[in-house]
Amino acid sequence: MSKRKELSYKWVIIGGGVIISLYFVMRLLLLGGVETSIVASFGPEKGGLVIAGIVAFVSYFVGGILIGIFSPGETVKEPALATFMAILPNAMHTIIWHLQYSYPLGGALVGLATTFVVGILMAVAGAWIGEKVQGRTVEKLREEGELPPPKPSSDSN
Image 1 (cartoon, rainbow, N blue to C red):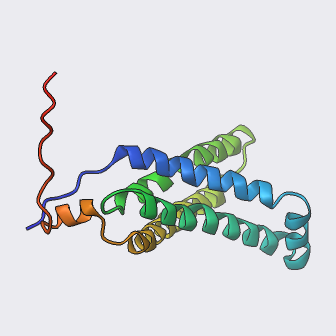
Image 2 (image 1 turned 180 degrees about the vertical axis):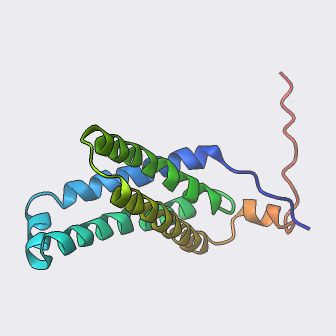
C-alpha cells in the first residue's frame, strides 16, 4: 500500500501566482483591437463569453499544465487549490460590487459557481496532462517504492 502524499502549500501558492499571472497576461494581450474584433464578430454577449473562455482556458488549463510539468511528485490537489486561491479575490470583488451598487446577486453567484467548477476542472485536467509530460521522476519512483529512499545527510554542525 502506498503512503499518502502530503499537500504542497508551496505549489499551491506558486500555482495561484501562475494562474493569476496568466490571467493578467491574457487580459493584456486581448486589449484593444483583438477584444474589439471578437466582440464585433460574435456580438456583445457571445463575444464576452468567447473572451472569457479564451482567458479561462489559458489561465486555468495552461496554468494546470505548467504546475503539473514543473512541480515534483504527483500533483492534482495543488492546481485545484491554486485555482480556488486565484478565483477568490475576483469573487469577493464581484460580490462587494454587486452589494455596493444594489444589483441582484443571483446571476453573479451562478456565474461565480460556474467559474469555480470549470476553473478547477480545467486546472486539474491540465495538471494531469502536465504530469504525463513530466514523466517518471526520481521522486515519483521513490514514492512508488521502485527506488530506495535517499540516504540521510550526515551534516553535523
